[in-house]
Length: 302
Image 1 (spheres, rainbow, N blue to C red):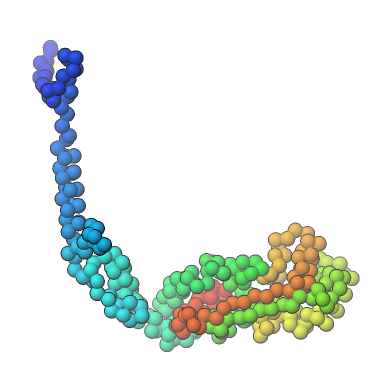
Image 2: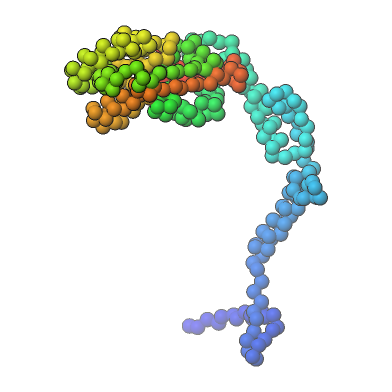
């Protein structure tokens, strides 16, 4: 059984070419047109409400309410609504919300901060930003440091001491570390021997004769800084040579005893100098305390 199908008349624009070639008129769907009109209305409302259009050497300020905020240095600013002013106001509100916790940290001892999960949690969250802004450029984001340049802060080997007081002094006053080069005082053989002795202290299998001679060289030239037991002196920032932790020479990453010895010989021959700047002029007392607590906990301080 056949069905009658209604035929719709196709609309054209009335233009025709070559007699039968016509231009159809296919209007846009209504939903698309209304969506377009809505975007036009939205744009006009946006232009009215917010800073938008260029106007000579300035721009339209919009009719949104003015924003008043206080900067970090205490200056009060009132300006028309804009995203920068909104950001500054949000930062002010964040500082005000944190002020109570910052005040608590400034009054608490390090041991009290350790014992209070709320204070220690806030200190860690605050310290991560301070560390990223001020310390990560040298010590890296995770505190791993850079071999030969900047100490690793997470390995529990503290050149200048790992107590809260010692770490705070390092941050506040800075540190100057220096190991003189011995190329003018020791012969090549003596430098080779003392390098063998130093490697033997961290359980490297070195020639017995070299080690015995190297110990004599060490006792005469190196023990004054590194101590007779070679465990270093925190008062001088000298390294512990018995813990297998290397901060200047990448002994673990060097293959073969001979190559390791040559790397240590280079250090003994040329020496090294490293400096950490003082932060007392840039950071507040509370910020230094927060960083001290963070670094102490990061490396399992003493």
